Image 1 (tube, one colour):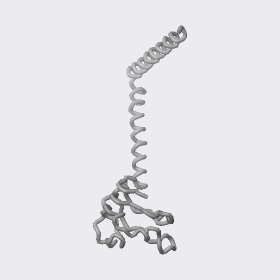
Image 2 (cartoon, rainbow, N blue to C red):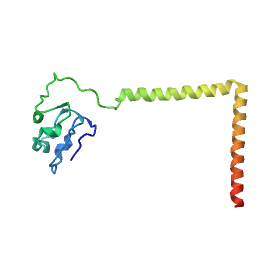
Image 3 (cartoon, rainbow, N blue to C red):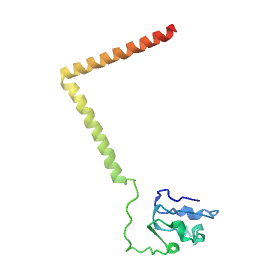
Image 4 (cartoon, rainbow, N blue to C red):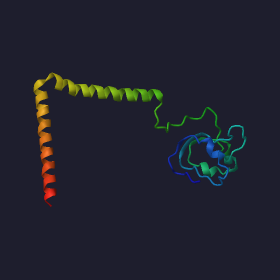
Length: 148
């Protein structure tokens, strides 16, 4: 399985180690972080243990584990965030801001039409003229198609 140069981020999922038929793997040139999975549940070995060539992990600066000779201690520099996902509180603020923006914008337009009689009359006159123009264009087109 060749997943090299795919701009992958985050950690290597443990499920990759459960792929028993995996013979070749290339994860080089990505943005993987953390430790290479060493066990799955109660299993002490994964399929990744049989793939001990360090070149399959080359180009992942923040990946660590014995196969590549980097210690996974806590004194390592923290990797830059590669995730574009928002956490729960950011999502709440995002949707709240979107809803407030919609409500504010809607009531600005609605308020102007509600309280300014001349603007309301002008708006409905423009809409009426637009409707007349579009309906006349459709009628002419349908009439010309019926004659052919």
